[in-house]
Every structure is written in structure tokens, then in C-alpha cells.
Figure 1 (cartoon, rainbow over the protein chains, first blue to last red):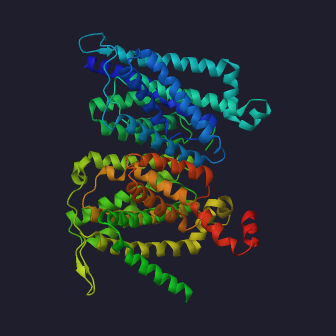
Figure 2 (tube, chains in turn cyan, purple; figure 1 turned 90 degrees about the vertical axis):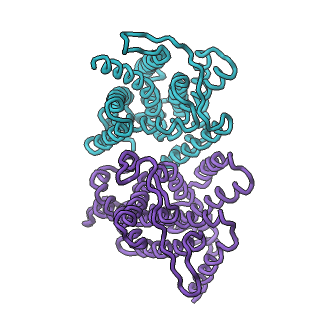
Figure 3 (cartoon, one colour; figure 1 turned 45 degrees about the vertical axis):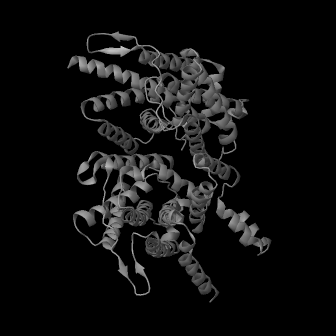
Length: 289
Length: 326
């Protein structure tokens, strides 16, 4: 029993890692752009397909392929900012619809390029850390956990300690006042989109060998990310991380001890409960909606 | 008089329409008719300023309810469709208690969560909802004859006539509601909520009313669909269809009654018929996505703004200026 608990705990840590990478990106985009990026799950998918293409087809080393995923998806984010979100700045519903359109395009491109079948990638490493006979952590999952810790810490330092980070937070809080202080709103929007999309891309790239890659894989991911950002408080990065951990623990334990559908229902009910009791979320204060 | 002629001509055109189409196009026509009801009922909710992501699931509630009433309780199909609509409206009233504590973006996400929970409950509970495989072998509409025409409801043409009639009646009711004092209050709830509240309007009650009416008609649409297709499952009402409804409403424009209908018809014809005929089978979602993006970028007020432009040009500049002043 103790071993089962420990193993489920490890699974939860892994789930928390990739969920928080995705959710933090989504929150960052929402905070700075004021738009809900429905295509975020598809950015995650694009990251996974970059690895499929580079690592499996072109035999590029895995970590180089992951870095390519980060940069490629970050550039997709830049393209979205320029083509969709900048012209639709004053039209939040329009931004949402445009991101849905972009989502359909990405899905169609993936389906045309790779087919709708599941892609299974040759495992990067078979190594497994064994804590005991029944408690084991595949090293591929460890990569995801390390990446999440390193990247999110780096992002935190970037946002809190550097001038760029200050500018970004200022632009998120009050775009007009920030612009009056000489902060380029376009510049901060580009940075936020690159980082936000890139985080989703790297999450997809690192988990590609661990999940079945298919054009619709973004679907469940975006729902999870929505739950997490609502529970954590829309616009709060710390909240998104805390909520990711809480959600991952609850969802993983529910899946292990009951079943996956019940776990999903519980997750959604939690989100509904938070919306009813404290609509700004556990950590949210500013109300941008 | 002129109006009557127009209505009669339109009715004749709608009666003749399916005979010029292929079998698969006739089937699409049936779905299009039902979708028009779906998107028009959705517009009634958007009048109060709330955008729901649960509308398609609520339509599914009507479909499941109607299928179960007719299958398990042996209710006569036309009655069970109406009861399905009533069930959907009732559920909307229940959902309004948690959901209307939220507004705007939070309502959007909250309604999405509520809808997704309902869908997962269908998936999880095999009895009575049939689990992931859903309900099969739903009672078809009983055939009947009106002398000059025999209704055989396995034929799409017959079902099209039936659903067109039902949808036309529903649209007329929706239109009357919008033009009634209640409908004007919905507008007030959206644009002047503080003022309306100060004038003694119970905002929450009117939001709930709009939600219930919209859901009831969506439920009727769901019932119509269930008894035509004969099988429903949780994935028939997933977020993909909701995205389509949202697109129809936004691409068409929600400022007028005909806007969402226009969006629904134009996009469906474009997607199902033009792109299919041209042989773009695989690229359809891509082109559809492009159309969505381009229309939101270059036509933010929807297709209805083109119609308005065309109809007001003849009347001189005064109307234009008046509209600009608004």
C-alpha cells in the first residue's frame, strides 16, 4: 500500500510538471495579451510533432530536437501575436475565435503531414530509477520534471528580477500606464507570446516519447490547463503552479483508486466550485475579464 | 400583401429545395435545419450578454431525454421531443443557480465545465445513458400520411419537411419573444444592466429566463436530431460542435435575428457542399479555420453587416449616419 502511494505520488509529480509548464504559458499569454488562447493545446501538439519529425525521421539528437520544438513553437506564438492577437487587441471574443481558427489549421496541418494515426516514438532512454521493487521512475519522466523546475524557476527570476520582467508585469497590469512609462507594448507582447508558446512546445516535445502523439492530443490538455488556471486564479503564475500540483495529485490519485472519468468529473467539479465560491481563483486578485 | 407573397415564395422555395439535391446533400439539409434552431436559440442567450459553452450539451440533454422517454417509457415520439425540450429547460434552470453567480469570461468557462460534467456523466453511467457507446435504436418518428404526401421518416426529404415545419414554428416563437417586452428587457440586461436593475428589473431572473428558453429550444433541436439519426453518444455533443455554433453566431453576427442563421447557412454550404465538391476533403478544417480567422479580422461585425450595408444604401445617407451615431 505504501509503495502504491509512493508510486502514485511520483506519477503526480510528473503530471504536475508538464501541466504547470502548459498552464503557466497560458496564464502568461492571458495576462499580457488579455486573450484566452484556445490553440494552446495545439501548440503543445506542435512541440510533440517537432520531435516526431526531427528525432524519429531526421535522427537529430533528442535534446536538440526538444530545443528545436521550443524555438519552432515559440515562433508559432510570435506569428499568432502578429497575425491574430495584435489586430484583435480590442476584441477579446474575436481573439478567442481567431485562436479557435488557428487551432483547426494546426490540427489539419498535422493530420495532413503525419496522418491521423498515433505516432509512437522510439524511447529516448530505457533507464529507470528504482527506489524499490514497485516504486520506479523512468528517466524520460525525470527529464520532464527537471525541465519544469528549471524553466519555471528561470521564468520566475526573469519576471521578478530583470527589467524585461518588470516591463512585462507592468504591461500585464496596466497596458496604458506601462506604455506611458516608455514600455513597448508590442515588444512585451512578443516576449510573452514567445515564452508562453515555447513552454507549451517544450512540454509537448519532452512528453512526446511518453504519450501517443496524434493531431487531437491537445484536446484533453487544454481542458486540464483551463481547470488549473481557473482554480489558481486567472493571471496568477504562482497560482497556476500551485493549482497544477494540487490538480495533478487529486487527478492521479482518483485515476488510480477509482477511474479516469470520475477523476475528470472531480476535477471539473472542483473548478466549478472555485468559480462559485471565489471566482477570482485561489491566488487571483486582478479581474481582467 | 407584399410580405405575404414573399413568405409564400420562400415557403415554395423551401418545399422544392430538397428535390434538386443528392441524397447526402438532403441529409445535410436536415442537419442544417436543426442547426439553424440551435444557433438561433443560442442567440437568445447572447442577447443578455452571456456566451455559454454548454449549449450543445444542453441540446444533448434534450436528445438523451427524448430518446429515453420514448424508449424506456414508451412515450409517443412527437410528445417525447417536446418533453425533451422541457427537460433541457428545467436543467438550465437548475444550472442557473451556480452558473449565474458568474459573468462574462467566468460564465464562459463555468458553463463549459458544467457541460463537460454532464457529458462525462453520460459516459460514465451505462444505465440509463448507455456509457461511451450511447443509446442505439432510438424510436423513429412514426410515419403518417396527409393525403397528398406520405411521410416516410427514413427518407431525408420527409424528415426535412417535418423538421423545417417545427423549426419554423420555433423560430417564429423566438422572434415573437425577442420583440415582446421580455425580449427588450433582455437587451436592457445586456447593455444597461445597472439602469435596468435600478428600474426594478430582476437581472438574475431575466438571465435565467433567457437561459431556460434558449435551452428548451436547443433541447427540441436535440430531440429532432436523435429521432432522425437513431443513435446518440456523448461524442455527438462534444466541444467541436459547440465551436461550430460559436463560429456560426460570430461569423454571421449576433446583432440581428437573421445574422446567426446567415452564418450557419453560409458556412455549412461552404464547408459541406462547396469544399466537398471541389475535392478538398482533407483540407476542409484548414480552410474552415482560415475562413474563421479572415472573417473575424476583416468582418468583425459579421455577415449581417454586409446585408445591412446593402439594404441601407438605397435609403440614402441618413440611416448610415444614424447607425454611426449609435
